[in-house]
Image 1 (tube, rainbow, N blue to C red):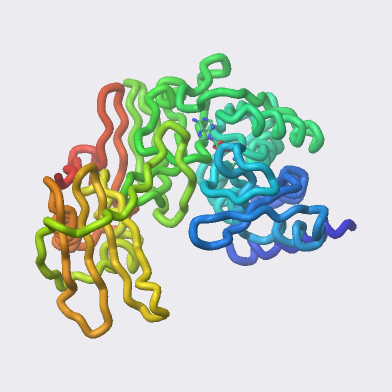
Image 2: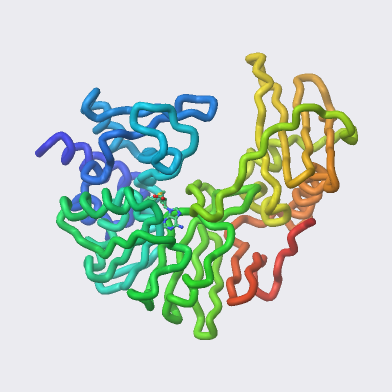
Length: 383
Ligand SMILES: C[S@@+](CC[C@H](N)C(=O)[O-])C[C@H]1O[C@@H](n2cnc3c(N)ncnc32)[C@H](O)[C@@H]1O
């Protein structure tokens, strides 16, 4: 047994022992080793919003250990514009964390013969797992980045599985292979592209990471009906996928000065709305979907920090300083963003702190909305 085979077997055993690998996927994970798909140059977080390359030829053992850890690995930065010797700024492709891949494959509910479209080929590993399970002739995978698609084709051929790999924008779906029984997105959306619904047969499933500017951690599973609509629950709120290219969220800069801001205080700790509880964070995001947040450490070695919220011309900051209570709030612009966030949190509390799994998403040809418990009970956005 090679080192790679031994490491793969250990990872598979660990995932299975932790209940993170559905039994029907075990043989597939053993048959499709991850190292065949990971590029020689991978990227590691170097702090302060930067990524540095790690090359396989510099330390093959460390590279292989990284490949067989239960972690996502960054495989492209800056849409490929930064060479493997530079410093990256933005993660633009990765091979997903094995336990999350396994969970999503289980949630997808497939068997031999199921016809699948995967959005976001990336390295090709997920497509290879799908192809091994349902038959390569039933899998189409689409990648927006031409160089990644080409690399994935080569890796897939090397692994002996050959699903159709398309270079293109997966938000259009891929009509030539439609209709599908399943669409699996491996990049996150704020708006589910309607072509995915139109290209899925009635009774078929769409599984996709989902988010908004406030929170990008959900996984939604929609069932397509026979009237061209799709409905279904959020299954998780702890996964974090990169956005499909056209739906990326801009990262606002903190304002240069605070002049003209309205001064107030709050007894609500920002951790409660953004950090402590995934269900709270998800629910607040449902009410303020266009608000981007950011934590800024005070940089003094202590626990003090500033919580920022941004939307268009509006911003808010809440200072969390040891010994200072209530917390100081400053808000600026046409919208009082902290007031909106606090109201969204109180709404969630008054609703009995519903878990994310009680929310669902409805997608029709002309509208999308979040509901609580039933599609008949839409949740209004709070602004
Ligand atoms: C998390 S990675 C996917 C991982 C992949 N499934 C694997 O097994 O390696 C997300 C991928 O989605 C791709 N992507 C982003 N927007 C896309 C779009 N509109 N259409 C198709 N692919 C897209 C990115 O280029 C990136 O490679």
